[in-house]
Amino acid sequence: MNTTTMMSEDGTGWTEAWSVKVVTSEMIPRLPRYHDIGPRRYKIIRVPAMAGGVALGETSIYAEEIRLAPQINNRATARVFLHEDIHAINEEYEIELTENQVSRLANGLCASLQALGFYPTELKLAEDP
Image 1 (cartoon, rainbow, N blue to C red):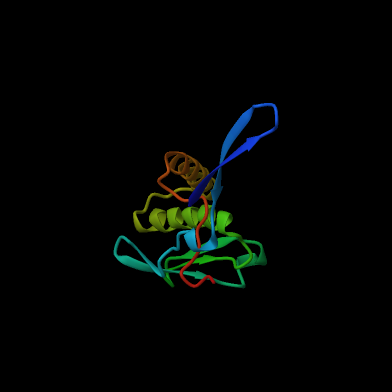
Image 2 (image 1 turned 45 degrees about the vertical axis):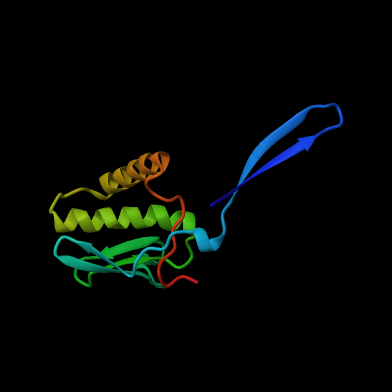
């Protein structure tokens, strides 16, 4: 992320300064193609046909895949991936969280980790342009 400081003078002797953060698509972090959780290696992919046609993501422990819908943007990809990753962790470690609990945990972790600067606000998949 580039930060540019800009200054402005309005003719009255008053000077303002502000910073603008410039993010380019090359700077958005990419997820790897595979993600190890417990003994399994999950492939992270975009799948055009999601369950029921409305899901933004899904996790298959049998196919060992974390699947994300192609229509979601980079910001949503960060949130949906974390949600699906928690589903995989839930299954691998037999935690037995409900869908509602997974959603709440994913939203809370995403907000907390982003506020601390430990998780990006946007993500791309390895296969994304």
